[in-house]
Image 1 (tube, rainbow, N blue to C red):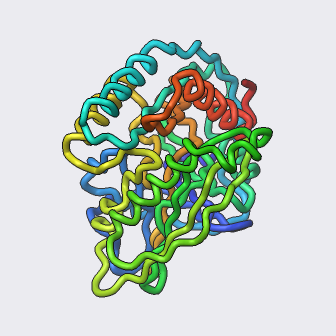
Image 2 (image 1 turned 180 degrees about the vertical axis):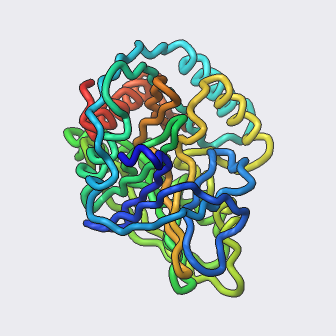
Length: 337
């Protein structure tokens, strides 16, 4: 790591192609009309200058030039089930009492302390395990950072064509046959598709539903595409899509949004989790949903995971899914579980 410049952001754009930005970053409110910029914000999109113009940009195949650090050791604390159980009961009542709630994603966070090594070194592991089905991403400064490898794209925009995806429904690979025809998983995925289509409006092309297998997890995946016309405001487009029902809630009403915000406050996930993170360059933009991540502030480490709850959800099954997802992230980042 360049000790003189601790501010780094990176995003994997494709196999063997990673864009790295070095700070200081200049925050602006809109994507620059010329040049390039990273985009990052918190989950609530509360930042007023989410477009970050780097002092220097480099395209590389790996991060060896930027990371000269030792593998970290983290001491993890047990995860308390009680807050999630309370949230689950709250949402179960909301599903039943006429709140018109269809889906919501609570997030449970495993917490730990760094006791040795450098957390920034995890970026190489994220890139090494991402392959062609996920995108490694990360950013850090002297106060903290976030690193991950996500299978979920929020949007790709090029030549007026927007591409996105519905990614919902989760199971271990051993359960593939059961997963492929599980009514609960299929309905959860269909709700995400419906929510994204409603957010986009107009004519949306939809591919067939498939199964994505990646790093010890199965997900249903459906790709969506829309031809845009007229001027495109990226901030508006991001707010249109984020949060999709895969990481947020459905329907996207003020009443349901207020329930979601209360649940987030009760569970206190990192603000970076499932937030948009992207790269703008020469009129093209791609942004990912920052799941499968580890974040830190100082020596405090956070490993969040979410699960999609619908009316048919079972408490024990969802708790097991959360544990599975956290275990996958630890493997992804070459951390000992």
